[in-house]
Each structure stands twice: as structure tokens, then as C-alpha cells.
Image (cartoon, rainbow, N blue to C red; front, side, top):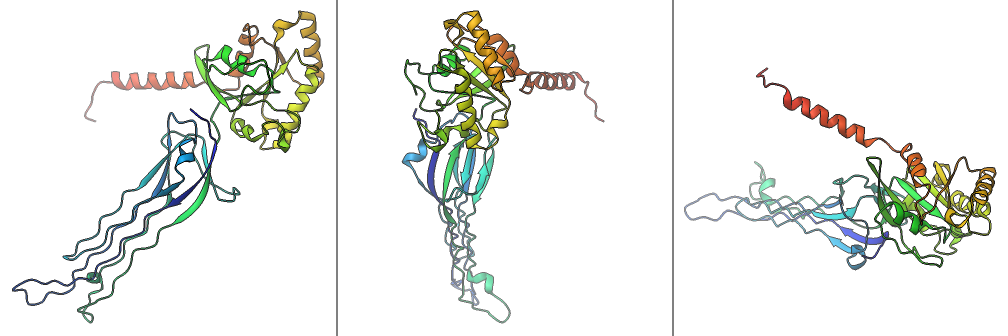
Length: 351
């Protein structure tokens, strides 16, 4: 499946149906009078967050979404049928932006969340509704209300608990493959990861989602390399794991480069909790690992974890630290289950 995190689409709600001009004509009925019915309501444009979607690729092939118009009013006081609403399914984490991308119009953070984005036009009045004591045979009617229309941008920000970042070739793909079943592409060259990758980690009876994004290089905020557009996918993470390659020319400088790009991107990324992981320790001896860890600490790292994505060494301690930043959903689910059990065991009473 191809990954797409931005798409521009056109939306148009349904126009309201026009009211009818009609007069009752029946044999043996002396006074007919007006009987034109009202028009039906046009369809709404509704966005809904759907579980299981993680890309906007469908909107590359379908950019125009138009709801149907309401039905015409008819004689015998028949109201036109209302049009069905047009429901557009989007992944959880999708934001709807204005055409100039300056305003967030909707933000979908939960499965099943719905937003009526554009309302369909109301149906027009038929001539029967204009009848009065002084206007016995009205011929006026209303057309339906016009449809609403606009161009919008869809922007996907993946919802993950943990974000994984670092320079190209820091070993992020090997790392996420070690702790999840993501099966990310691994290669001995830079930028093997071209799009964000999600994986689910199971650790000590708990699980959380980790997002791996393409590597950052110096000047990414100005468009160098793949740029920093994918940093938006870790803006909602609770904690970041920053991988630093121990086999690189200068691990401390590598850490600083990524920190500078986070600061240039903004959105509070540089202020998020970060766990610095000195990766590929299987390629160095203990003394060298300790020396580089000390350099990272002096460069500003609060705590350095020595890990190996290839062998899994040090992962236990790092994942334990990650859990301390995440809510304990297990205890909440356990309490809910216990309360449900108590309710089931409570004897029935009419009071």
C-alpha cells in the first residue's frame, strides 16, 4: 500500500430541492386550491474517522466529492425526498485544513469521530405553504437553498505513543524490527526509510505504538534530504527515542544536528521528553561505549541508553523507561472489568 499523508479535495454539499406550484384538480371537487409540496433537503458532507486506515492514498484518485440534491416538491402536498448524506472515511489522526493551510477546520483523534463539515441546503417552500385568507391561489414558491462548496487539504498525522528519530543510517529500521513485527526495509545505505512506519510493541503486559520516520540531515528544515515534512507524524507522541549511531564520525555532533532540526521545525518537538539511545553497541567494546555515552551526556543528554538493534542488547532497560512516560491502560481496563463483574454478581432487585 502506498503512503500518502497530504491530499487536496473539493467538497460540495447537496442543494435543496425546489418547492412545487400545483393546484388540486379533482372531479366533483368544487374548490381545489394550492397543493404544491416543499422541496427536500440536500445531503450533508460528513467526515468520519475509520479504524484500520493509515494513508490518504484513496484521495489521490478521487478528489471531488459531491452530495446529492434534495428532491422536488410535488402536487398533492408531497414533500420531496431528502438526499442521503455523503460520508467520507479518513484515517484517525487526519486534520482538515483550509485551502491556504492556515486554519485547522477539523481534527480526528478517535475512531468513529464524526463531523458534519458542510450542510446540505434546505428545501424550498411549495405554493401550498403560501395560502392565506387573502391569498387563496398563490403561485409563488421557493427554490432550494444553494449548496456549500470549498477546497480543503487533508493532512495525516499518525497517532503513535513513541516517535523514533535520528540521522540516516542510525539503525532505526533495524531497531523497530527488533522490538515489533513492522518488517521495515533495512539497507546499508542512507534513506532506506522513505515514509513513516508504524509498529506495535508488547512489553511487560502492555503495548504501545511506535512510529519510525525517515532520517533527518542538517538543513532538513530547509528541504535538504527528504526534508522535515514527516516530523508532523511525531508531534503527538508522548516520548521520543533518539537513536545515535556509535559507528558514526561524531555521535555528539549527530545528536546536536537532529536537535537543531527539531528546534527549527517547532511545534514543541524539542521540548518533548527524549530518550537518547546509543545504537550499534555490538560494534564497539565497553570502554568505547562508556566514552561516547559520557560525551552525549556532556552535550546535553539527560540519560543515555546503550542498545543494539541487531542483537537486542539494552532493549529491556530502554523499553522500561518508555513505559514510565505512558499511561497505564492495563490497570484502567482491569478496574473496568472488575466493576463489570461486581455488577453482574449483584442480585437483582426491583428497587
